[in-house]
Image 1 (cartoon, one colour):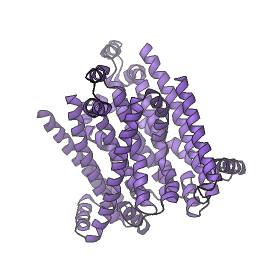
Image 2 (cartoon, one colour):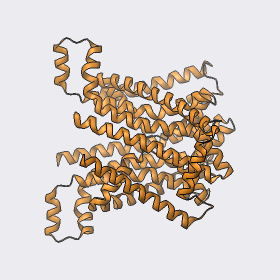
Image 3 (cartoon, each protein chain N blue to C red):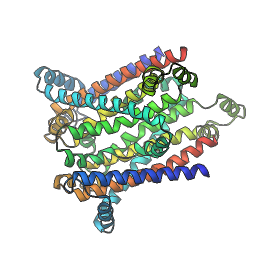
Length: 250
Length: 248
């Protein structure tokens, strides 16, 4: 595994170097893309100037709200649906086809319904994220051994107490997979919605810079978003693997 | 047989529930925000009867099919290569996973700068979305093929191509198909997103101009048709997917 990591870093370094050389040699025109070193320099300048702090805070806050809403609603809905067989059967086709539906197609509707504030963006992030949480919560609850459910009954726990003290903790590693997806999807949803149409946020700023041919802002911001999203996803991924490994051992 | 009956009953119940919720939302939110289910279906039927709508559909369809072909072909190629060659697979996997979970819409300006406004940019954007899941699923599927099968193929002295076509591909098909199913959805989303910016034709463009004009009839009708299209194709794919997994 170590060797693969080394190769991977080498590959990324080689790709960035190749890009740098191609840009410096003029094969890739500066109007198409500035050299990676220039992009990084511009990003440092932008972050230092603080002029994007507002947009960054807006995007991250909206992503955070979408994550919190989708995870809490998703776990509660998942636990409820798990108890109610008929509801689950009825919703099964929805879950199966949900991610085939282009959620952004609803964005225009949300703008008409809620105006061009934060709500439509958060709602898109929430819609993309929540079903992943529900599906993974159901998956986790399906795996709870019956002996644990029986134990809860012997201790005369109510449904809510049993859920919070026994079944949900057992299902936690699987729910965490849903949380990990929710983080990625909330990011994709909010930034995408900002990009399509909004007044603030990193997605909006990228689109704005693009329309003004302002590569000195656009590329650094693209790099920033991709770096934030990748760092977040990678650390969650690493954490998830640790959780699952512990479950296998225990 | 009974299974498919209950599945159909569930789908019907769900459709009725969604339509009821929609009608309630309409009563609650009023005519300015959205249109009623019946009116939307009627408007959609009206759109389907016009020539100009089909020009947009054809444009989106062309871009989508081309993007899907690239996603599937490229994804399978990469997936098989990474699945068969253990080390390159280990090197590539985290990068593929990272690629899957970034907001790819931010890459759209770069795609436009490279390809310019028009069909190639849409195709490229659709393919960027679809290729990753196809590759990830194909890679995992090839890796998980029962080693006995591969040994048997070697004992029978099959050539590398015969091995891939007659042993590896059929054995990995159920998982590969799941990847293609996800790739289908994401390619559609990518193509539509691509059309929302820097495009003069297509359903995504139609949606974008309708927002500008606050034309709720068009927004609702196009959204409805997209949802019906995506849901019905995806249902067919899911049925095939389940068959393949059961047979395996």
